[in-house]
Image (cartoon, rainbow, N blue to C red; front, side, top):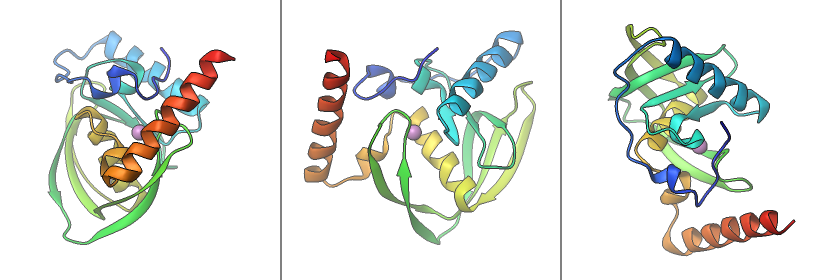
Length: 164
Ligand code: NI
């Protein structure tokens, strides 16, 4: 397992619901956590490691949590901007405006449903990861000119890395 970086097609992959909860699910989440921590991330979604599944992990400082098949049930009208980065888009940050507070329904590693209301960084990070499950990246929030420039610099950086 490794982090896939833009323009890897995995990042635009169609994800499917996790139906089976067993030892493989636990192993997958465990592997994802190791990769996330090794890269100092606060969240990681399955497509970022090449898996087309609706699963993400998050740790914004309150411990590791898994959100399987997450659905946003409710969101606040109040929105705020946050400068977000992404492990799959090295060197890029984007100011993204999102609801400040959300309520998410999801399943844990054992398949048990839970409902959680989140705000602040936690809420922003979960929304960022849920975007990944829908093939959406922070660069998609940019205007066309900035999008073009970001894509160009990402592709150039990847090319330079391959040439080393
Ligand atoms: Ni990301």
